[in-house]
Amino acid sequence: MLTKLFASFFFLTVLASCSKDDLTPTVPINETVDTTALLKYSGNFEPGPYGTTSGNAEVYTSAKIAEVKLVNFNTSNGPDLHVFLSKEPMPINYIDLGSLKSTNGNQVYSIPGNPDLSSYKYISVHCVAYNHLFGYAKLN
Image (cartoon, rainbow, N blue to C red):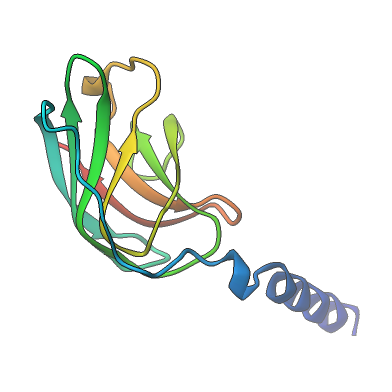
């Protein structure tokens, strides 16, 4: 009986903690990178265990800035989705580029600081609240 009560409480807590307001916007966007930037790395998205993600990830650099562009991007929706520049597909050693702007379209994220981009080989879409990987692109 205690197990059923605990399971019911857990299920209701998880259900209540994720509301429609927590989901990522779905309106397509079309952002562009700095026109002086050069394409340094790119890769195709693979689905993760908790979502379906497709499109390409590109890393551009210029004298002033480094940026990640998600191209023809599409992913399953979820709460608290972020874009990570990571050393592995499931982000452990990563730079958080911010909240995902939309579940689809072309979107650009600035890379803060001056990291060694050759050691960050993945762009990951990750649910921070539940530590769920929605998808990743290996950069070449």
